[in-house]
Length: 177
Image 1 (cartoon, rainbow, N blue to C red):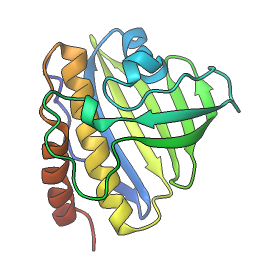
Image 2: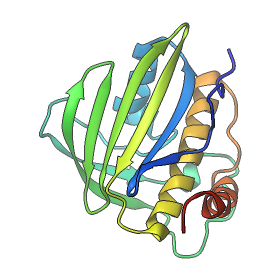
Image 3: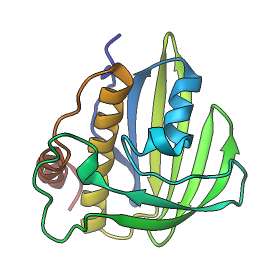
């Protein structure tokens, strides 16, 4: 299965402050759901943080992007080694949909849809406050999802920060000024 078989691997603005990005992953859907909801699996591609699977539940996400790939490559100036964010589950439909409110940076919805032997993951990040944040978030989601594809297919992901830096420049040319 070609896990990058998407019309476009890049995220797109579907509204002025809303980014949507998709990846086709190998199933079953239960396995991909675990990558979204299990802290140990999620920390391998995005951020750690135990969450009780119940609407309204508050939890903390902890990003350590230097640990996502080996080697991580050089972290850009201005990025801490660790980032923590208070979050809350706002919508939950097990194996299908998980929505999370992120403190001061919008909300994110993960949707899973079976596609043959694969699973289409759609990430929608709403309420991005400005273009600068949009560029960082677009490059971030793109790179985090590339790491997820690599993990889900048993491959080694490309160095995180190197990819993020390249993608931020590419999104600068792709997103409206």
